[in-house]
Image 1: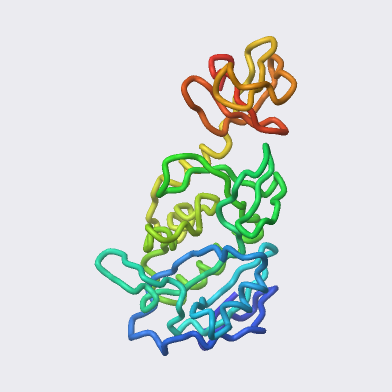
Image 2 (image 1 turned 30 degrees about the horizontal axis):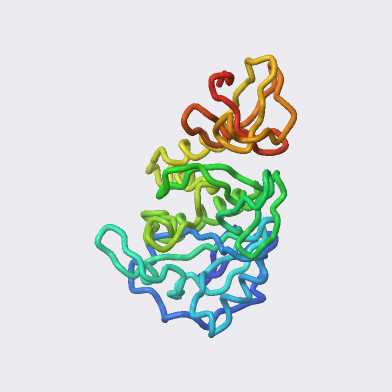
Length: 275
């Protein structure tokens, strides 16, 4: 993979099918020096790429990365695109004028509509294997998110590497960091700190916290452990009891109770779990 005349070359799955008019001319000398990672919040990479090329969208980005690793380049890297909006970082405002925007096809935060059933904001049900449980760096509790695919993460790392090599990139940021009141992307499912540590030698520890909180496992140490709809004996049971030695994933704890996942979600007394 390489960059010629501010366009990607020599990478599989690369498309220039869409070109966005939503630009503000060329960067000033010495720029861009920042990468900003986003999720699209949309239903597919191609629909997001198409949307970002509509004048009525009043938004754009340089790249959209799909879940199979496909890449849409919407603008040359020397053009200012409209991906950051109202934003600030270390005394700078208006990060559009300093940064390359990379959008990843991902629906973002999910809502639990029924035990074990998670949906996007546009009412699409996400399969259990695509649900990531983690704590956002700007939030205090573990919630459900649309997981990124391995192909998507690897392609994003490779794209960022070639951009760091080609431009004077000094920082890689999430939209959630430059607009923390408005935005949640790319969210805890994306290994943002790992990306920074790998390419910029700028380690942080919040990725590890999110990954750890996404998969805490525990073993049942009671002979039979009732699974209830809420954190207390007053809630009805919702599943057959867990048995000694069975492993579950702990999603949340509250007042001595743990919300766990087997094939469904329910609450158990945490004193009978051995992490």
